[in-house]
Length: 555
Figure 1 (cartoon, rainbow, N blue to C red):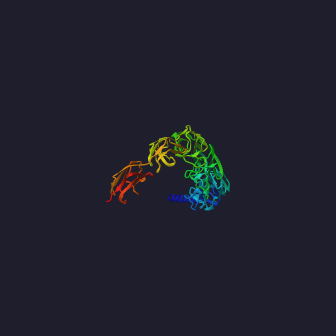
Figure 2 (cartoon, rainbow, N blue to C red):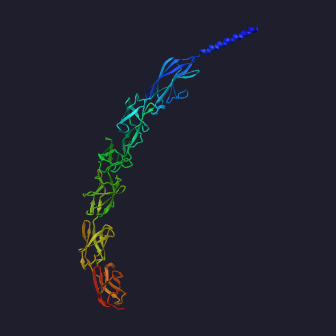
Figure 3 (cartoon, one colour):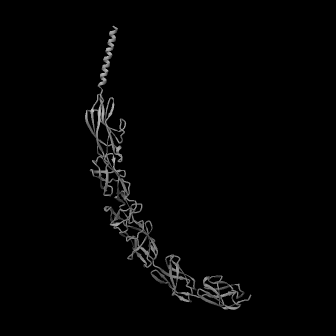
Protein backbone atom coordinates (compact mmCIF):
# COMPACT_ATOMS: atom_id res chain seq x y z
CA UNK A 1 0.00 0.00 0.00
CA UNK A 2 2.79 2.33 0.85
CA UNK A 3 4.51 1.43 -2.39
CA UNK A 4 1.42 2.29 -4.43
CA UNK A 5 1.16 5.69 -2.68
CA UNK A 6 4.78 6.53 -3.44
CA UNK A 7 4.27 5.38 -7.05
CA UNK A 8 1.30 7.81 -7.26
CA UNK A 9 3.35 10.70 -5.85
CA UNK A 10 6.06 10.14 -8.41
CA UNK A 11 3.51 10.05 -11.24
CA UNK A 12 1.92 13.37 -10.05
CA UNK A 13 5.33 15.07 -9.83
CA UNK A 14 6.23 13.98 -13.36
CA UNK A 15 2.82 15.21 -14.59
CA UNK A 16 3.16 18.64 -12.88
CA UNK A 17 6.71 18.98 -14.11
CA UNK A 18 5.62 18.19 -17.61
CA UNK A 19 2.78 20.72 -17.37
CA UNK A 20 5.02 23.58 -16.22
CA UNK A 21 7.68 22.70 -18.75
CA UNK A 22 5.00 22.88 -21.42
CA UNK A 23 3.83 26.43 -20.19
CA UNK A 24 7.38 27.77 -20.22
CA UNK A 25 7.90 26.68 -23.79
CA UNK A 26 4.64 28.54 -24.89
CA UNK A 27 6.09 32.12 -24.08
CA UNK A 28 7.47 34.09 -27.05
CA UNK A 29 8.70 37.74 -26.95
CA UNK A 30 7.46 40.37 -29.46
CA UNK A 31 9.70 41.56 -32.31
CA UNK A 32 9.56 45.19 -33.57
CA UNK A 33 11.77 47.16 -35.98
CA UNK A 34 12.31 50.86 -36.83
CA UNK A 35 12.21 50.89 -40.61
CA UNK A 36 12.79 54.56 -41.51
CA UNK A 37 12.51 58.17 -40.41
CA UNK A 38 12.10 60.95 -42.98
CA UNK A 39 11.80 64.69 -42.23
CA UNK A 40 8.86 66.12 -44.14
CA UNK A 41 9.37 69.75 -43.22
CA UNK A 42 10.61 71.95 -40.42
CA UNK A 43 7.36 71.13 -38.69
CA UNK A 44 7.01 67.34 -39.06
CA UNK A 45 8.64 64.04 -39.87
CA UNK A 46 7.37 60.55 -40.80
CA UNK A 47 8.42 57.36 -39.06
CA UNK A 48 7.80 53.80 -40.38
CA UNK A 49 8.00 50.75 -38.12
CA UNK A 50 7.26 47.06 -38.40
CA UNK A 51 5.97 44.42 -35.99
CA UNK A 52 7.18 41.06 -37.21
CA UNK A 53 5.96 39.12 -34.16
CA UNK A 54 3.50 40.07 -31.43
CA UNK A 55 4.74 37.57 -28.89
CA UNK A 56 2.77 35.46 -26.48
CA UNK A 57 1.84 38.24 -24.00
CA UNK A 58 -0.95 40.79 -24.28
CA UNK A 59 0.20 44.06 -25.88
CA UNK A 60 -0.54 47.16 -23.77
CA UNK A 61 0.86 49.91 -26.03
CA UNK A 62 3.04 50.54 -29.06
CA UNK A 63 4.30 53.48 -31.13
CA UNK A 64 7.39 55.70 -31.39
CA UNK A 65 9.71 57.58 -29.06
CA UNK A 66 11.78 60.52 -30.36
CA UNK A 67 14.28 62.95 -28.88
CA UNK A 68 16.88 65.52 -29.94
CA UNK A 69 19.60 63.19 -28.64
CA UNK A 70 20.20 59.41 -28.80
CA UNK A 71 19.05 59.12 -25.18
CA UNK A 72 15.79 57.24 -25.69
CA UNK A 73 14.30 54.87 -23.14
CA UNK A 74 11.11 54.40 -21.22
CA UNK A 75 11.94 57.59 -19.30
CA UNK A 76 13.78 59.65 -21.94
CA UNK A 77 12.22 61.14 -25.05
CA UNK A 78 8.77 62.06 -26.26
CA UNK A 79 6.40 59.14 -26.66
CA UNK A 80 3.91 58.99 -29.53
CA UNK A 81 1.44 56.21 -28.64
CA UNK A 82 -0.55 54.34 -31.27
CA UNK A 83 -2.62 52.53 -28.66
CA UNK A 84 -2.97 48.83 -27.93
CA UNK A 85 -4.92 47.73 -30.97
CA UNK A 86 -1.97 46.16 -32.73
CA UNK A 87 -1.23 43.67 -35.45
CA UNK A 88 1.83 42.50 -37.28
CA UNK A 89 3.14 44.39 -40.28
CA UNK A 90 4.25 47.91 -41.02
CA UNK A 91 2.83 50.96 -39.31
CA UNK A 92 3.67 54.69 -39.70
CA UNK A 93 2.96 58.09 -38.24
CA UNK A 94 3.44 61.73 -39.34
CA UNK A 95 4.68 63.46 -36.19
CA UNK A 96 4.55 67.24 -35.58
CA UNK A 97 7.87 68.40 -34.21
CA UNK A 98 7.86 69.36 -30.57
CA UNK A 99 9.53 72.59 -29.36
CA UNK A 100 12.60 70.69 -28.24
CA UNK A 101 13.80 71.36 -31.78
CA UNK A 102 13.41 75.13 -31.57
CA UNK A 103 17.18 75.51 -31.83
CA UNK A 104 18.07 75.57 -35.56
CA UNK A 105 21.65 74.57 -34.76
CA UNK A 106 20.57 71.24 -33.26
CA UNK A 107 18.05 69.89 -35.73
CA UNK A 108 18.78 66.11 -35.62
CA UNK A 109 15.79 63.94 -34.71
CA UNK A 110 16.41 60.48 -33.09
CA UNK A 111 13.59 57.91 -33.22
CA UNK A 112 12.92 54.28 -32.33
CA UNK A 113 9.79 52.13 -32.24
CA UNK A 114 8.52 50.51 -29.08
CA UNK A 115 6.05 47.82 -28.01
CA UNK A 116 4.99 47.22 -24.44
CA UNK A 117 3.36 44.02 -23.07
CA UNK A 118 2.79 42.67 -19.62
CA UNK A 119 6.41 41.59 -19.32
CA UNK A 120 8.01 44.91 -20.34
CA UNK A 121 8.98 47.10 -23.31
CA UNK A 122 10.99 46.21 -26.36
CA UNK A 123 12.49 48.83 -28.74
CA UNK A 124 13.34 48.85 -32.40
CA UNK A 125 16.58 50.18 -33.82
CA UNK A 126 17.61 53.82 -33.18
CA UNK A 127 17.45 55.88 -36.37
CA UNK A 128 17.93 59.60 -37.01
CA UNK A 129 17.21 62.30 -39.58
CA UNK A 130 17.90 66.02 -39.90
CA UNK A 131 14.92 68.34 -39.64
CA UNK A 132 15.22 70.91 -42.47
CA UNK A 133 15.80 74.45 -41.15
CA UNK A 134 13.92 77.30 -42.86
CA UNK A 135 16.04 80.15 -44.16
CA UNK A 136 15.08 83.80 -44.58
CA UNK A 137 16.08 85.97 -47.52
CA UNK A 138 14.89 89.53 -48.02
CA UNK A 139 12.04 91.50 -46.50
CA UNK A 140 10.42 93.81 -49.03
CA UNK A 141 9.90 96.61 -48.73
CA UNK A 142 12.82 97.00 -46.31
CA UNK A 143 11.04 99.77 -44.41
CA UNK A 144 7.36 99.82 -43.46
CA UNK A 145 4.86 101.08 -40.90
CA UNK A 146 2.23 99.29 -38.83
CA UNK A 147 -0.55 97.93 -41.03
CA UNK A 148 1.68 97.62 -44.10
CA UNK A 149 2.01 94.26 -45.83
CA UNK A 150 5.57 93.01 -46.28
CA UNK A 151 6.87 89.98 -48.15
CA UNK A 152 9.47 87.70 -46.59
CA UNK A 153 11.28 85.48 -49.04
CA UNK A 154 13.20 82.33 -48.18
CA UNK A 155 13.07 78.55 -48.08
CA UNK A 156 10.13 77.53 -45.89
CA UNK A 157 9.51 73.96 -47.19
CA UNK A 158 5.88 72.99 -46.62
CA UNK A 159 5.13 75.70 -44.07
CA UNK A 160 1.48 76.77 -43.84
CA UNK A 161 -0.30 79.78 -42.37
CA UNK A 162 -1.36 77.62 -39.43
CA UNK A 163 2.12 76.46 -38.41
CA UNK A 164 3.95 79.71 -39.25
CA UNK A 165 4.56 82.41 -36.67
CA UNK A 166 6.19 85.79 -37.40
CA UNK A 167 7.23 88.00 -34.49
CA UNK A 168 8.33 91.64 -34.79
CA UNK A 169 10.25 92.71 -31.66
CA UNK A 170 8.24 90.35 -29.39
CA UNK A 171 4.91 91.32 -31.02
CA UNK A 172 3.17 88.57 -32.96
CA UNK A 173 2.17 89.58 -36.49
CA UNK A 174 -0.78 88.54 -38.62
CA UNK A 175 0.34 85.99 -41.23
CA UNK A 176 -1.71 86.35 -44.40
CA UNK A 177 -0.31 83.80 -46.86
CA UNK A 178 2.51 81.27 -46.82
CA UNK A 179 4.19 79.37 -49.63
CA UNK A 180 7.43 77.42 -49.75
CA UNK A 181 9.29 80.55 -50.86
CA UNK A 182 7.48 83.56 -49.37
CA UNK A 183 5.41 84.72 -46.44
CA UNK A 184 3.06 87.71 -46.60
CA UNK A 185 2.60 89.34 -43.21
CA UNK A 186 1.09 92.50 -41.77
CA UNK A 187 3.44 94.72 -39.70
CA UNK A 188 1.90 94.79 -36.21
CA UNK A 189 1.07 97.78 -34.04
CA UNK A 190 2.40 98.06 -30.51
CA UNK A 191 6.12 98.06 -31.30
CA UNK A 192 8.23 100.18 -28.98
CA UNK A 193 10.59 101.27 -31.76
CA UNK A 194 10.73 104.88 -32.90
CA UNK A 195 10.60 106.04 -36.48
CA UNK A 196 13.78 105.01 -38.28
CA UNK A 197 14.71 102.26 -35.82
CA UNK A 198 15.31 98.68 -36.93
CA UNK A 199 13.26 95.87 -35.36
CA UNK A 200 14.13 92.19 -35.19
CA UNK A 201 11.91 89.84 -37.24
CA UNK A 202 11.76 86.21 -36.12
CA UNK A 203 10.03 83.45 -38.09
CA UNK A 204 9.05 80.09 -36.63
CA UNK A 205 7.84 77.12 -38.71
CA UNK A 206 6.34 74.76 -36.24
CA UNK A 207 8.94 74.46 -33.49
CA UNK A 208 11.85 75.55 -35.67
CA UNK A 209 12.91 79.20 -35.46
CA UNK A 210 14.78 80.66 -38.40
CA UNK A 211 17.74 82.94 -38.34
CA UNK A 212 16.52 86.46 -37.59
CA UNK A 213 16.12 89.33 -40.03
CA UNK A 214 15.29 93.01 -39.53
CA UNK A 215 12.98 95.73 -40.82
CA UNK A 216 13.31 99.50 -40.56
CA UNK A 217 10.14 100.73 -38.93
CA UNK A 218 8.39 103.89 -40.10
CA UNK A 219 6.07 106.20 -38.21
CA UNK A 220 2.36 105.64 -38.73
CA UNK A 221 0.61 108.94 -37.95
CA UNK A 222 -3.09 108.50 -37.17
CA UNK A 223 -4.40 111.71 -35.58
CA UNK A 224 -3.39 115.06 -34.07
CA UNK A 225 -4.48 117.39 -31.28
CA UNK A 226 -5.60 120.13 -30.91
CA UNK A 227 -7.64 120.72 -34.04
CA UNK A 228 -7.62 124.51 -33.69
CA UNK A 229 -5.70 127.32 -32.05
CA UNK A 230 -3.61 130.43 -32.83
CA UNK A 231 -0.53 130.33 -34.99
CA UNK A 232 2.41 128.97 -33.02
CA UNK A 233 0.22 126.33 -31.34
CA UNK A 234 2.07 123.10 -30.67
CA UNK A 235 0.35 120.15 -32.35
CA UNK A 236 0.92 116.65 -30.94
CA UNK A 237 0.31 113.36 -32.73
CA UNK A 238 -1.01 109.91 -31.98
CA UNK A 239 -0.06 106.79 -33.89
CA UNK A 240 2.55 104.05 -33.97
CA UNK A 241 6.34 104.41 -33.80
CA UNK A 242 6.29 108.21 -33.91
CA UNK A 243 9.59 110.12 -33.74
CA UNK A 244 10.63 111.97 -30.59
CA UNK A 245 13.07 114.30 -32.37
CA UNK A 246 14.19 115.33 -35.84
CA UNK A 247 17.51 113.46 -35.83
CA UNK A 248 16.71 110.75 -38.35
CA UNK A 249 18.02 109.81 -41.78
CA UNK A 250 14.54 110.12 -43.28
CA UNK A 251 12.50 112.36 -40.99
CA UNK A 252 8.77 112.61 -41.69
CA UNK A 253 7.63 115.68 -43.59
CA UNK A 254 4.79 117.44 -41.77
CA UNK A 255 2.93 120.17 -43.64
CA UNK A 256 0.12 122.55 -42.75
CA UNK A 257 -1.53 124.03 -45.80
CA UNK A 258 1.43 122.91 -47.90
CA UNK A 259 3.98 124.61 -45.61
CA UNK A 260 6.56 122.53 -43.80
CA UNK A 261 6.43 122.55 -40.02
CA UNK A 262 9.59 121.67 -38.12
CA UNK A 263 9.45 118.75 -35.67
CA UNK A 264 10.05 119.91 -32.11
CA UNK A 265 13.26 118.42 -30.72
CA UNK A 266 12.72 115.67 -28.10
CA UNK A 267 8.99 116.02 -28.49
CA UNK A 268 7.86 114.92 -31.92
CA UNK A 269 5.14 117.55 -32.25
CA UNK A 270 5.19 120.62 -34.50
CA UNK A 271 4.40 124.31 -34.08
CA UNK A 272 1.82 125.76 -36.44
CA UNK A 273 3.67 128.13 -38.84
CA UNK A 274 2.67 131.81 -38.73
CA UNK A 275 2.22 131.80 -42.50
CA UNK A 276 -0.58 129.22 -42.73
CA UNK A 277 -4.09 129.87 -44.01
CA UNK A 278 -7.10 129.98 -41.71
CA UNK A 279 -8.06 126.41 -42.69
CA UNK A 280 -5.01 124.29 -43.39
CA UNK A 281 -4.85 120.59 -44.14
CA UNK A 282 -2.35 118.79 -41.93
CA UNK A 283 -0.51 116.21 -44.01
CA UNK A 284 2.30 113.82 -43.13
CA UNK A 285 4.65 112.32 -45.71
CA UNK A 286 6.57 109.22 -44.64
CA UNK A 287 8.84 107.44 -47.11
CA UNK A 288 7.24 109.29 -50.00
CA UNK A 289 3.67 108.43 -49.01
CA UNK A 290 1.50 111.42 -48.12
CA UNK A 291 -1.48 111.16 -45.80
CA UNK A 292 -3.84 113.98 -44.81
CA UNK A 293 -4.81 113.61 -41.15
CA UNK A 294 -7.38 116.42 -41.07
CA UNK A 295 -7.77 120.19 -41.07
CA UNK A 296 -6.30 122.59 -38.53
CA UNK A 297 -8.33 125.79 -37.98
CA UNK A 298 -6.34 128.89 -37.03
CA UNK A 299 -8.33 130.93 -34.51
CA UNK A 300 -8.33 134.72 -34.81
CA UNK A 301 -6.80 136.87 -32.05
CA UNK A 302 -9.14 139.00 -29.93
CA UNK A 303 -8.06 142.41 -28.55
CA UNK A 304 -9.54 143.11 -25.13
CA UNK A 305 -7.76 146.27 -23.94
CA UNK A 306 -5.20 148.99 -24.72
CA UNK A 307 -3.10 150.11 -21.77
CA UNK A 308 -2.80 153.04 -21.44
CA UNK A 309 -5.58 154.22 -23.70
CA UNK A 310 -3.96 157.61 -24.37
CA UNK A 311 -0.26 158.26 -25.01
CA UNK A 312 2.17 160.67 -26.60
CA UNK A 313 3.95 159.81 -29.83
CA UNK A 314 6.90 157.53 -29.12
CA UNK A 315 5.40 156.00 -25.98
CA UNK A 316 4.75 152.25 -25.49
CA UNK A 317 1.40 150.61 -24.88
CA UNK A 318 0.34 147.03 -24.05
CA UNK A 319 -2.18 145.48 -26.42
CA UNK A 320 -3.93 142.86 -24.33
CA UNK A 321 -6.06 140.02 -25.64
CA UNK A 322 -6.66 136.31 -26.16
CA UNK A 323 -5.80 133.73 -28.82
CA UNK A 324 -2.33 135.22 -29.04
CA UNK A 325 0.61 132.99 -29.99
CA UNK A 326 2.89 131.92 -27.17
CA UNK A 327 6.09 132.81 -29.00
CA UNK A 328 7.55 135.49 -31.25
CA UNK A 329 8.15 134.91 -34.92
CA UNK A 330 10.09 136.51 -37.76
CA UNK A 331 8.25 135.16 -40.79
CA UNK A 332 5.82 136.98 -43.06
CA UNK A 333 2.98 136.10 -40.68
CA UNK A 334 4.70 137.61 -37.62
CA UNK A 335 2.60 139.82 -35.27
CA UNK A 336 2.30 143.44 -36.46
CA UNK A 337 0.23 146.48 -35.48
CA UNK A 338 -0.74 149.67 -37.28
CA UNK A 339 -2.70 152.80 -36.34
CA UNK A 340 -5.33 154.07 -38.75
CA UNK A 341 -4.03 154.07 -42.32
CA UNK A 342 -0.42 153.98 -41.18
CA UNK A 343 2.13 151.26 -41.84
CA UNK A 344 2.36 147.98 -39.98
CA UNK A 345 5.29 147.60 -37.60
CA UNK A 346 6.53 144.53 -35.75
CA UNK A 347 5.42 143.89 -32.18
CA UNK A 348 6.65 141.37 -29.64
CA UNK A 349 5.22 139.40 -26.77
CA UNK A 350 5.56 141.15 -23.44
CA UNK A 351 3.80 138.41 -21.51
CA UNK A 352 1.09 135.84 -22.14
CA UNK A 353 -1.73 137.61 -23.96
CA UNK A 354 0.16 140.93 -24.18
CA UNK A 355 2.03 142.62 -27.03
CA UNK A 356 4.03 145.78 -26.44
CA UNK A 357 3.74 148.39 -29.17
CA UNK A 358 5.86 151.51 -29.67
CA UNK A 359 3.68 154.34 -30.98
CA UNK A 360 5.38 156.07 -33.93
CA UNK A 361 7.10 159.32 -32.98
CA UNK A 362 5.88 161.18 -36.06
CA UNK A 363 2.16 160.57 -35.63
CA UNK A 364 -0.25 163.47 -35.29
CA UNK A 365 -2.52 163.91 -32.28
CA UNK A 366 -5.94 162.30 -32.56
CA UNK A 367 -7.97 159.13 -32.02
CA UNK A 368 -6.79 156.13 -34.03
CA UNK A 369 -8.14 152.69 -34.86
CA UNK A 370 -5.64 149.97 -33.92
CA UNK A 371 -5.24 146.91 -36.14
CA UNK A 372 -3.45 143.70 -35.14
CA UNK A 373 -2.31 141.30 -37.84
CA UNK A 374 -1.16 137.77 -36.96
CA UNK A 375 -0.88 134.88 -39.41
CA UNK A 376 -3.95 134.83 -41.67
CA UNK A 377 -5.99 137.28 -39.54
CA UNK A 378 -6.28 141.04 -39.22
CA UNK A 379 -8.45 142.23 -36.31
CA UNK A 380 -9.58 145.65 -35.09
CA UNK A 381 -9.37 146.78 -31.49
CA UNK A 382 -12.81 147.60 -30.02
CA UNK A 383 -11.25 150.74 -28.48
CA UNK A 384 -9.44 153.54 -30.23
CA UNK A 385 -6.03 154.76 -29.12
CA UNK A 386 -5.82 158.45 -28.24
CA UNK A 387 -2.60 160.15 -29.33
CA UNK A 388 -1.95 163.24 -27.24
CA UNK A 389 -0.51 166.41 -28.72
CA UNK A 390 2.57 168.08 -27.19
CA UNK A 391 2.05 171.63 -25.90
CA UNK A 392 4.19 174.34 -24.30
CA UNK A 393 2.23 177.10 -22.56
CA UNK A 394 4.49 179.04 -20.19
CA UNK A 395 7.90 179.25 -18.50
CA UNK A 396 9.41 180.63 -15.30
CA UNK A 397 11.37 182.55 -14.31
CA UNK A 398 11.06 185.04 -17.13
CA UNK A 399 14.72 185.98 -17.02
CA UNK A 400 18.05 184.53 -15.98
CA UNK A 401 21.70 184.25 -16.80
CA UNK A 402 23.55 181.38 -18.45
CA UNK A 403 23.00 177.99 -16.78
CA UNK A 404 19.96 179.32 -14.94
CA UNK A 405 17.34 176.57 -14.46
CA UNK A 406 14.04 177.22 -16.28
CA UNK A 407 10.75 175.28 -15.93
CA UNK A 408 8.44 175.12 -18.93
CA UNK A 409 4.80 174.05 -18.50
CA UNK A 410 2.82 172.10 -21.10
CA UNK A 411 2.16 168.46 -22.14
CA UNK A 412 5.17 166.17 -22.21
CA UNK A 413 6.17 162.50 -22.05
CA UNK A 414 7.60 161.98 -18.59
CA UNK A 415 11.28 161.06 -18.60
CA UNK A 416 11.81 162.05 -22.23
CA UNK A 417 14.41 164.53 -23.47
CA UNK A 418 13.51 167.32 -25.88
CA UNK A 419 15.59 169.76 -27.88
CA UNK A 420 15.05 173.32 -26.60
CA UNK A 421 16.19 176.48 -28.40
CA UNK A 422 16.92 179.84 -26.74
CA UNK A 423 16.84 181.90 -29.86
CA UNK A 424 19.23 180.05 -32.17
CA UNK A 425 21.20 178.38 -29.39
CA UNK A 426 20.26 174.71 -28.84
CA UNK A 427 20.23 172.82 -25.55
CA UNK A 428 18.01 170.03 -24.21
CA UNK A 429 15.70 169.49 -21.31
CA UNK A 430 14.01 166.56 -19.60
CA UNK A 431 10.32 166.21 -18.78
CA UNK A 432 10.24 165.75 -15.03
CA UNK A 433 6.48 165.15 -15.23
CA UNK A 434 3.74 165.11 -17.84
CA UNK A 435 3.31 168.89 -17.36
CA UNK A 436 6.83 170.16 -16.67
CA UNK A 437 10.01 170.38 -18.75
CA UNK A 438 13.22 171.40 -16.97
CA UNK A 439 16.00 173.13 -18.90
CA UNK A 440 18.94 175.44 -18.19
CA UNK A 441 19.87 178.59 -20.07
CA UNK A 442 22.65 177.69 -22.51
CA UNK A 443 26.26 178.51 -21.63
CA UNK A 444 27.61 181.82 -22.88
CA UNK A 445 24.30 183.40 -23.89
CA UNK A 446 24.46 187.09 -24.74
CA UNK A 447 22.24 189.43 -22.76
CA UNK A 448 18.90 190.29 -24.29
CA UNK A 449 15.44 188.92 -25.05
CA UNK A 450 15.00 185.59 -26.92
CA UNK A 451 12.20 183.19 -27.86
CA UNK A 452 12.12 179.67 -26.35
CA UNK A 453 11.16 176.90 -28.80
CA UNK A 454 10.73 173.16 -28.11
CA UNK A 455 11.25 170.48 -30.77
CA UNK A 456 8.70 167.68 -30.43
CA UNK A 457 8.82 164.45 -32.51
CA UNK A 458 6.44 165.77 -35.16
CA UNK A 459 6.42 169.56 -34.61
CA UNK A 460 8.19 172.61 -33.15
CA UNK A 461 6.34 174.72 -30.63
CA UNK A 462 7.34 178.26 -29.51
CA UNK A 463 6.52 179.05 -25.89
CA UNK A 464 4.52 182.29 -25.57
CA UNK A 465 6.49 185.29 -24.27
CA UNK A 466 10.10 186.43 -24.30
CA UNK A 467 12.88 185.20 -22.07
CA UNK A 468 15.41 187.83 -21.04
CA UNK A 469 18.98 186.61 -20.83
CA UNK A 470 20.73 188.59 -18.11
CA UNK A 471 24.41 188.84 -17.36
CA UNK A 472 25.92 188.18 -13.93
CA UNK A 473 26.23 191.12 -11.48
CA UNK A 474 29.22 191.84 -9.24
CA UNK A 475 27.94 193.85 -6.25
CA UNK A 476 30.69 193.67 -3.60
CA UNK A 477 33.69 191.83 -2.21
CA UNK A 478 35.27 191.66 1.22
CA UNK A 479 37.80 192.20 2.57
CA UNK A 480 38.94 194.88 0.14
CA UNK A 481 42.57 194.07 0.91
CA UNK A 482 44.24 190.96 2.21
CA UNK A 483 47.36 188.78 2.23
CA UNK A 484 47.60 185.51 0.18
CA UNK A 485 45.57 182.65 1.73
CA UNK A 486 42.77 184.89 2.92
CA UNK A 487 39.17 183.81 2.11
CA UNK A 488 37.55 186.43 -0.13
CA UNK A 489 33.72 186.63 -0.33
CA UNK A 490 32.06 188.01 -3.47
CA UNK A 491 28.37 189.04 -3.61
CA UNK A 492 26.32 189.40 -6.77
CA UNK A 493 23.81 187.46 -8.91
CA UNK A 494 23.63 185.08 -11.84
CA UNK A 495 26.60 183.01 -10.80
CA UNK A 496 26.94 179.59 -12.46
CA UNK A 497 28.06 176.40 -10.65
CA UNK A 498 31.70 175.90 -9.60
CA UNK A 499 32.88 174.23 -12.79
CA UNK A 500 31.54 177.15 -14.88
CA UNK A 501 32.85 179.94 -12.61
CA UNK A 502 36.29 181.39 -11.95
CA UNK A 503 37.64 184.54 -10.24
CA UNK A 504 40.46 186.58 -11.81
CA UNK A 505 42.93 188.49 -9.63
CA UNK A 506 44.20 190.78 -12.32
CA UNK A 507 45.11 188.28 -15.04
CA UNK A 508 45.44 185.25 -12.75
CA UNK A 509 42.30 182.98 -12.75
CA UNK A 510 41.52 181.10 -9.55
CA UNK A 511 38.94 178.32 -9.04
CA UNK A 512 36.47 179.25 -6.28
CA UNK A 513 35.96 177.27 -3.09
CA UNK A 514 32.18 177.48 -3.36
CA UNK A 515 29.57 179.04 -5.61
CA UNK A 516 25.87 179.82 -5.21
CA UNK A 517 23.77 181.96 -7.51
CA UNK A 518 24.68 185.06 -5.49
CA UNK A 519 27.82 184.23 -3.44
CA UNK A 520 31.34 183.12 -4.31
CA UNK A 521 34.13 182.27 -1.85
CA UNK A 522 37.70 182.10 -3.10
CA UNK A 523 41.23 181.92 -1.57
CA UNK A 524 43.48 184.86 -2.35
CA UNK A 525 46.33 183.39 -4.43
CA UNK A 526 50.05 183.65 -3.60
CA UNK A 527 51.27 183.77 -7.19
CA UNK A 528 50.09 187.36 -7.74
CA UNK A 529 52.30 190.40 -7.20
CA UNK A 530 51.23 192.66 -4.30
CA UNK A 531 49.34 195.84 -5.12
CA UNK A 532 46.00 197.05 -6.40
CA UNK A 533 44.22 194.99 -9.10
CA UNK A 534 40.82 194.40 -10.72
CA UNK A 535 38.61 191.47 -9.57
CA UNK A 536 36.68 189.80 -12.40
CA UNK A 537 34.06 187.01 -12.14
CA UNK A 538 33.94 184.73 -15.19
CA UNK A 539 30.72 182.63 -15.01
CA UNK A 540 28.58 180.83 -17.57
CA UNK A 541 30.69 182.14 -20.40
CA UNK A 542 30.23 185.78 -19.35
CA UNK A 543 32.59 188.16 -17.47
CA UNK A 544 31.83 190.98 -15.05
CA UNK A 545 34.37 193.16 -13.11
CA UNK A 546 33.91 195.27 -9.99
CA UNK A 547 34.51 199.00 -10.33
CA UNK A 548 36.76 199.07 -7.23
CA UNK A 549 40.22 197.54 -6.96
CA UNK A 550 41.34 194.82 -4.59
CA UNK A 551 44.68 195.35 -2.85
CA UNK A 552 46.99 192.39 -2.30
CA UNK A 553 49.17 192.99 0.75
CA UNK A 554 52.73 191.82 1.04
CA UNK A 555 53.33 189.27 3.76
